[in-house]
Length: 116
Image 1 (cartoon, rainbow, N blue to C red):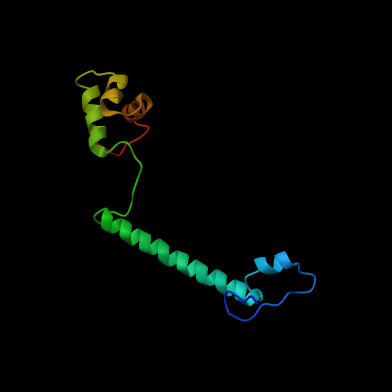
Image 2 (cartoon, rainbow, N blue to C red):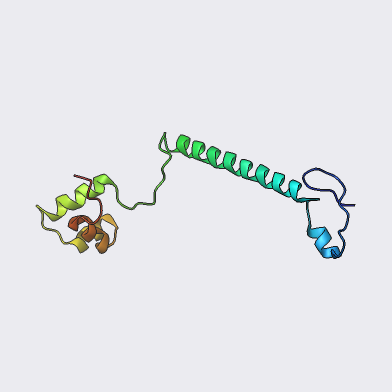
Protein backbone atom coordinates (compact mmCIF):
# COMPACT_ATOMS: atom_id res chain seq x y z
CA UNK A 1 0.00 0.00 0.00
CA UNK A 2 1.15 3.55 -0.70
CA UNK A 3 1.58 6.21 1.98
CA UNK A 4 1.07 9.97 1.92
CA UNK A 5 4.33 11.80 1.22
CA UNK A 6 3.57 14.34 3.96
CA UNK A 7 1.78 12.66 6.87
CA UNK A 8 2.74 9.01 6.08
CA UNK A 9 -0.83 7.68 6.40
CA UNK A 10 -1.92 4.93 4.04
CA UNK A 11 -3.51 6.14 0.82
CA UNK A 12 -6.70 4.54 -0.41
CA UNK A 13 -8.28 4.86 -3.83
CA UNK A 14 -10.96 7.52 -4.12
CA UNK A 15 -14.25 6.72 -5.76
CA UNK A 16 -13.86 6.96 -9.53
CA UNK A 17 -10.07 7.26 -9.38
CA UNK A 18 -8.17 5.07 -11.82
CA UNK A 19 -5.21 2.95 -10.77
CA UNK A 20 -2.88 5.25 -12.71
CA UNK A 21 -4.27 8.35 -10.97
CA UNK A 22 -3.93 6.62 -7.63
CA UNK A 23 -0.26 5.83 -8.20
CA UNK A 24 0.45 9.38 -9.41
CA UNK A 25 -1.18 10.95 -6.34
CA UNK A 26 1.30 11.64 -3.49
CA UNK A 27 -0.87 13.17 -0.75
CA UNK A 28 -4.02 12.10 1.10
CA UNK A 29 -5.87 15.46 1.27
CA UNK A 30 -5.62 19.21 0.56
CA UNK A 31 -4.06 20.04 3.92
CA UNK A 32 -1.14 17.71 3.20
CA UNK A 33 -0.77 19.21 -0.29
CA UNK A 34 -0.64 22.77 1.09
CA UNK A 35 1.73 21.76 3.90
CA UNK A 36 4.07 20.11 1.40
CA UNK A 37 3.99 23.20 -0.84
CA UNK A 38 4.83 25.43 2.12
CA UNK A 39 7.71 23.14 3.07
CA UNK A 40 9.01 23.18 -0.50
CA UNK A 41 8.80 26.97 -0.69
CA UNK A 42 10.71 27.30 2.59
CA UNK A 43 13.34 24.89 1.33
CA UNK A 44 13.64 26.87 -1.92
CA UNK A 45 13.90 30.17 -0.03
CA UNK A 46 16.66 28.76 2.16
CA UNK A 47 18.52 27.33 -0.82
CA UNK A 48 18.29 30.69 -2.62
CA UNK A 49 19.68 32.52 0.42
CA UNK A 50 22.44 29.92 0.67
CA UNK A 51 23.31 30.41 -3.01
CA UNK A 52 23.52 34.19 -2.56
CA UNK A 53 25.76 33.74 0.48
CA UNK A 54 28.06 31.32 -1.39
CA UNK A 55 28.20 33.66 -4.39
CA UNK A 56 29.23 36.51 -2.07
CA UNK A 57 32.03 34.37 -0.61
CA UNK A 58 33.33 33.42 -4.04
CA UNK A 59 33.17 36.96 -5.40
CA UNK A 60 34.91 38.44 -2.38
CA UNK A 61 31.88 40.13 -0.87
CA UNK A 62 30.26 41.13 -4.17
CA UNK A 63 27.14 39.00 -4.63
CA UNK A 64 26.11 40.72 -7.87
CA UNK A 65 27.38 38.68 -10.80
CA UNK A 66 26.92 40.26 -14.21
CA UNK A 67 27.49 39.21 -17.78
CA UNK A 68 28.73 42.64 -18.82
CA UNK A 69 31.44 42.65 -21.47
CA UNK A 70 32.64 46.10 -20.52
CA UNK A 71 34.03 47.36 -17.26
CA UNK A 72 34.50 50.97 -16.19
CA UNK A 73 38.21 50.73 -17.02
CA UNK A 74 37.44 49.46 -20.54
CA UNK A 75 34.94 52.30 -21.04
CA UNK A 76 37.58 54.85 -20.07
CA UNK A 77 40.01 53.16 -22.46
CA UNK A 78 37.45 53.34 -25.30
CA UNK A 79 36.96 57.06 -24.76
CA UNK A 80 40.72 57.62 -24.51
CA UNK A 81 41.41 55.75 -27.75
CA UNK A 82 38.62 57.52 -29.64
CA UNK A 83 39.06 61.18 -28.70
CA UNK A 84 42.76 62.05 -28.66
CA UNK A 85 44.15 59.17 -30.74
CA UNK A 86 41.47 59.13 -33.42
CA UNK A 87 40.81 55.38 -33.71
CA UNK A 88 37.51 54.30 -35.26
CA UNK A 89 34.82 52.41 -33.36
CA UNK A 90 35.50 49.33 -35.47
CA UNK A 91 39.22 49.34 -34.62
CA UNK A 92 38.52 49.87 -30.91
CA UNK A 93 35.97 47.04 -30.92
CA UNK A 94 38.42 44.66 -32.57
CA UNK A 95 41.12 45.63 -30.06
CA UNK A 96 38.92 45.14 -26.97
CA UNK A 97 37.00 42.16 -28.45
CA UNK A 98 33.56 43.80 -28.28
CA UNK A 99 31.10 44.68 -31.03
CA UNK A 100 31.36 47.95 -32.92
CA UNK A 101 27.76 48.81 -31.89
CA UNK A 102 28.73 48.48 -28.23
CA UNK A 103 31.60 50.92 -28.70
CA UNK A 104 29.35 53.36 -30.57
CA UNK A 105 26.78 53.29 -27.77
CA UNK A 106 29.49 54.06 -25.21
CA UNK A 107 30.82 56.95 -27.28
CA UNK A 108 27.36 58.42 -27.91
CA UNK A 109 26.44 58.20 -24.23
CA UNK A 110 23.60 55.70 -24.61
CA UNK A 111 25.36 53.30 -22.24
CA UNK A 112 27.94 53.76 -19.48
CA UNK A 113 27.01 57.43 -19.16
CA UNK A 114 27.79 57.37 -15.43
CA UNK A 115 31.48 56.51 -15.98
CA UNK A 116 33.69 59.57 -16.27
